[in-house]
Image (cartoon, rainbow, N blue to C red; front, side, top):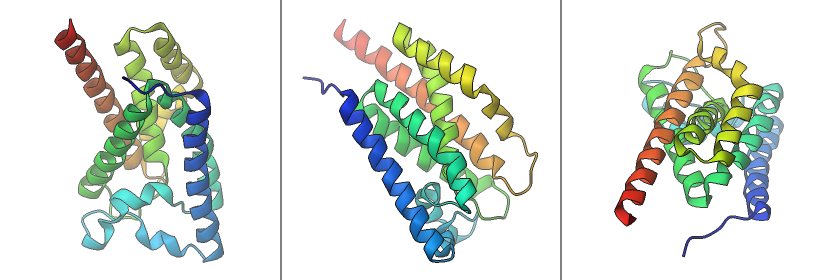
Length: 192
């Protein structure tokens, strides 16, 4: 029996994510950005923890504000694919983006949820079309229409923005969408 995710359970998950990141932002704000020591720093062993931790901490309050709204919105839309899919895609995006930034990013501190936002964006735009389901295609079209400008964030236009996190997040999201589509196709063929 497959677990159906209701809108109220989706809201609870998004609210939990909101409170986690907001709580960390408040702690970081009150401690003079002490949590930023856990940011990802490429090719340094002390920066390895940042692969998992850095998406949850931000460099400033404005940095937090620019990420929290699209993160919550995209999380809710991704939950339309199911609870399990949400967690698998989220873990894949966080870990793959983090590893790629650690391996190939500039020697600078990389932190913030924007890599996850870009990953969700990539997944949501591609996965709906691959699913061929009208509801999910509709989500893809809406995300592409309202947030398509995000694509310019993968370009190295500003030195203080981790365009690497944006780029590798987008790639991770697109890869997750392809893997999800392949898994769905294989499951259908198995039971056909």
